[in-house]
Image 1 (cartoon, rainbow over the protein chains, first blue to last red):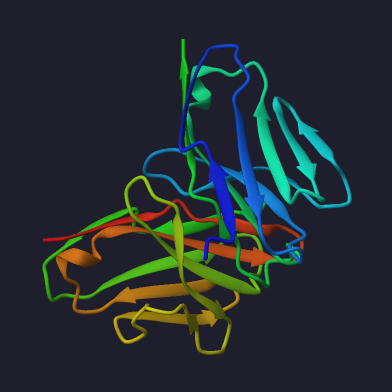
Image 2 (image 1 turned 90 degrees about the horizontal axis):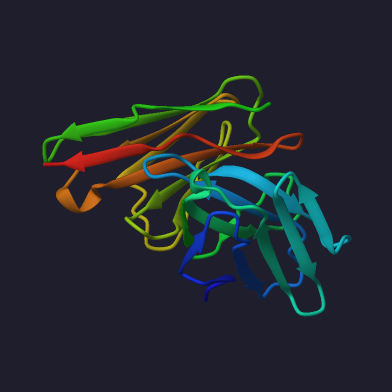
Length: 114
Length: 114
């Protein structure tokens, strides 16, 4: 059973556009929702994370929107750049302290066209 | 910030030989380390969870005798792929976690078995 569902599978936007990636989760006990960026041949790098007590979090050009009642969260990338072309993974876990596993979404391959 | 060093980044080995991959937390003590496997264009698949000084917990379907995990200290975990076969070729990623820094990923190891 896929604990975290992610869409779309791939996304192409023009430079300056705002790609939006969506995730939905099943387990209402999850309370830590990070987004990771992965370049080919590299490990995932944390972009931004949110906990369910807030509905939105911004860090630089990256924004997470969180809807607890719908069990959904999304990543928005403002003013996207070709350097943002990568695969993005959403994830969820219990507590976020590191003691529990991260459940990953299936990933979204983003291409930003110059 | 937290840094996790993973070595080697790439390794090619002959079928039937064993390969060891190291994962070190450089500036923090990791309470838990996770090992993942990633196939091309797919998400991270959890293989096992390890805590210092105790046996690793393997996910269903992962052969513990084939993928040996040793977590000898709070800063070092190793994954040994024993009697490697071409189907073991994959991208292996470790994650070290701590209460303060959450999840930090290594840069991954590309294993090719010929």
